[in-house]
Image 1 (cartoon, rainbow over the protein chains, first blue to last red):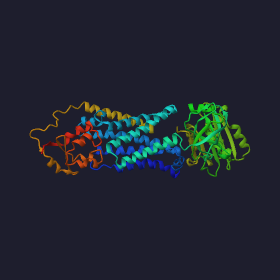
Image 2: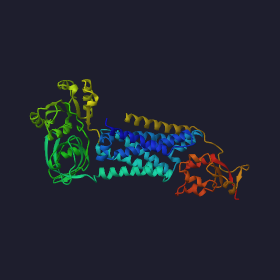
Image 3: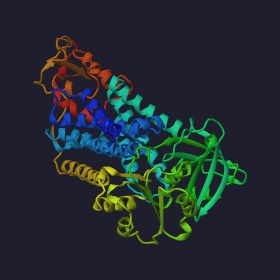
Length: 417
Length: 123
């Protein structure tokens, strides 16, 4: 684990601790103290979650990669929400000393005023928005709309804080961090204010439900390297109207003049629509992100790709023949999903270091045991996996059982939306 | 793990809120709690109230009643700089406007009797 990977969890710990230190209660009852501390710890965790949501290539590289940022964004947001649930309950518990009626009046929105209603509304929006993040089968656009509720919930919570405490340094600092993170995410990331303009120069269909587009930069090109991915929002062209949403795609080829190739699998409404892409369509790119294969060692390699997970390996092979013994296994369901087998076979024929095994596994999970057993010197290879999470997990387990050390197994998964 | 944490904490929160409501509903309503001064109750002049003007000894008068908020001050949600200047003074208008044009909540009204120590006299 690279040192930068510790930075997101450190941030998720530092901001709640800073909030608690700033508001540390003195001379209050235990329940009232717990209420104040849980509120500020939850607020700090949510602020960390907002900071980690900022989708910027430099920030992602500095903090260990976009996948780590998103993972800790999710964790910190969930923990922050749970801490905030303690806040009103602890306040009510403080009233139990007097009577259960006083405790309920402390809690009941009917006995409160609009500053408290802001807090309740913020908490309810966090509850609804967070619930949606645990629904992986929710359509992307509905998921995204519900995700915006989380940002609104945080803002309402901070307004609650301001209404109760006034514009003190801690409150203004929290509001400043939240507005900066939300503003950056909305304007720069979601609206693509700093995205680079590109144009589709060619489109072909190497397999069923798969389009490969060649992109030419209209201005300065993104400094992408093989193994990285970009976020692309496709616009309009002759006879084509894009969905204009930023989606992640791994770069599958890099050419002269900043030319990029992307392979787009039809996995949702937008990517299905993108199967009709034509030359001339304009788009905007953000990135590049990721460092997959960047730290590959000098020893023999095992590359295992599932479906469209072949893209980063393809980008490397298209840029140069492998300098070290490399065994590439490409798993796909059916022969018409293979896509690039002919091209990779041709590259392997011209490269003595590359051996290529395409496998059509059908609709059932592939039997990895025999496949891995056939890899020469498996235990001494460095393994790079790129595919659906289920395949990565199963392959990682099988590799460890075959004697490959855990530190020699590297993942690239497609988990974030 | 995060999903389990979310579901269990949300359910626990809902059960706790319902528990507070139920406990309040099953508690008999208090009788005889009133802010009206009894004949034998202590009466304080504004000058007497003004003698208690520090955070360690903080009296205020609100709507004709005198309160000793010394014990409450650390628990007041707002910044101490908001409430402490009212120690020793009549805070009726501040209580009504909360300095930003809005009154205190009904919950705040329920806290007042706990700190009331007497009635304010005219002089």
